[in-house]
Length: 400
Image (cartoon, rainbow, N blue to C red; front, side):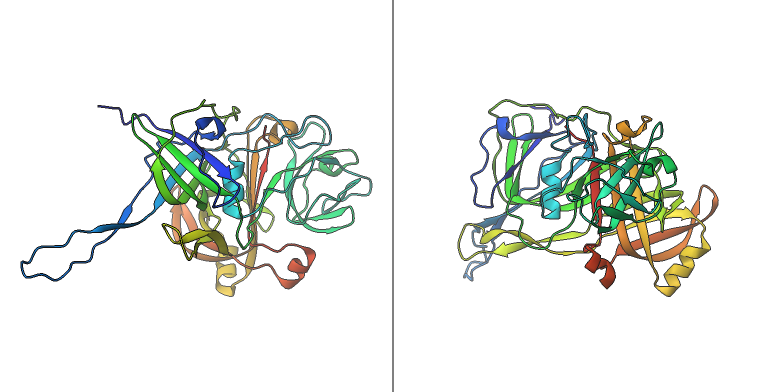
């Protein structure tokens, strides 16, 4: 007999759907999954029952295979940042999975300092050529923890932020501006595909090639441990890999915990509970004219992010609901260590620039509250013209 407690998970990004499957753990990345269960590996059959004169059923015949896997992990932080000087991070935790889900490589810059003439809403940089609209930046002044904002629009080296900075030191000349690994949904076929490998005790599965078809953030209420929730859909399954050298998770910083993590509605901090964010990127199978499973890949066809939160009663939310008014939602979770340099090594941020809400009565800690569900919508025409073209953005500060 073998123990069911033996669960080890690896993944690898390969160049295309047609690229050969990995053959050794040496090339794969360890995922510190929580309570991982084996992937689902259904073998499909032709179950037709042919007519007969004896009433017995016909044998079935194998047709296609499929594979699916739900994986949950803590959100581990990095040991390096993206700053104006020093050794920059080159990868963030689960980067290949995030890029596959969003359908594009992460966009990042090396960090900057604030130039003269900056205000709390329009910050000048010495050179903003590599900064794109929609990116997240962490503004860090002397002896303060810094503030995360997203770039709403850009004119040369002047960046308009999604809402004002509260601390003057954060936009003073010479203040550090840290950059992020920025992810945004991109419609179409993202060529790299993912393989996932599960090792049990004497029993293994390799699934893929496929896409990360589901991604959401959970454990975001104060005091909870934050989680990445991934769903991996693979084209097929095969015997798992046990050969090759296993390398432990390279991200050894403490994982994120939602303590004092701000959630903003239209730039105002709101105390919330039961916060969940689903990025809503939809992946569809591309049919093929040949092949065992008649698939030639997967592609992204739409993005409709959604989520929910519970807040203490707020009459404004009911007004926004009844009027169909759009609101901006922003969530930031950071390591508890003080100092902007530490925050730049361990922060995640989400921006939904155009969200519409629905509300219902609720109770929170024995007090009158509101349960809010939201859906991210297409940005307004003027914002699209300015470069803000997607309904949701995700940013990770810190890596290795």
